[in-house]
Image 1 (cartoon, rainbow, N blue to C red):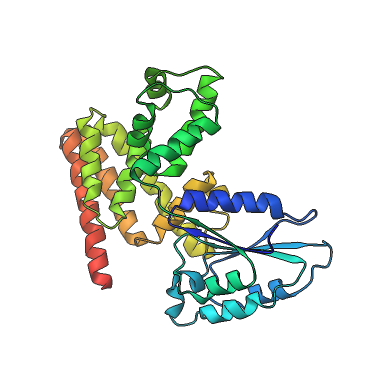
Image 2: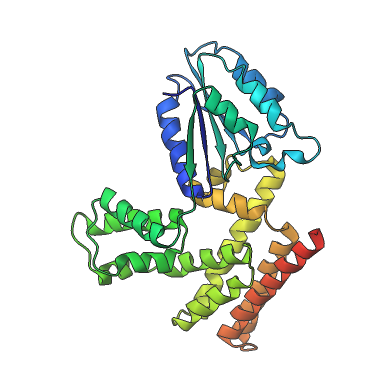
Length: 329
């Protein structure tokens, strides 16, 4: 395999899948792959790159989301990209290295040129949207040997949104459900009956995305489809509770390494929580959780209508994110 690989892109699930495949190929016989998570200073990483392994004939390293790749190295206390370029020049012949960025590394970044100069591999995953998203789902259906009725792809897009991790998880569920048999669209809807949770992943993603008000639109869509407001409230509260726990973990450990095991979540879900946790303050998310508990209390006492309580909570959450971003700037 190539000694030096750069995997980057806008589609997090595909980046993580490529890294998983790289790890499977690169893992040394006796030791696990060593991972360096988002280091600002590169001294420790430099020692790992340059030194020869003592016990294994080979050594495998992953440098994940270093600020030198994403352009955030301009802040104080962070080594510049040129420092990473210099370290690549010290790569021991017995070491294989994978650089990972869950974002597009700009073409002008000197690390790109350094990887190319050393004959390294560069793998880029663009965001998958629109027709490309449907084509990707159809390929994944074929890879899994599924036979799904007409309308199944559209149903998966609707309930899982653009999140490839959620879609892949639902397809894996369909494999077990099908047991080698064709599935009609009715079967697919039955198997993906937990679409409230998938839809609310979209709600939370919208709240923390570029346009927080879209979170309210996604709640309206779920409610207009006849989903029970009390059930949606419980699921959303659970997702925000996971977000609060992720923020506490990141504050205590400094990185998302080990988050999946700590929360008992799949890797793709832990990665999303880690990303979302950094996009909003812990005081804001704690406020959301308290507000949802208050809505739940008012629903049970009849002080507020089921749909109104949920809509108001999400609208206020969107306003909180907008106000927080305005204060930062």
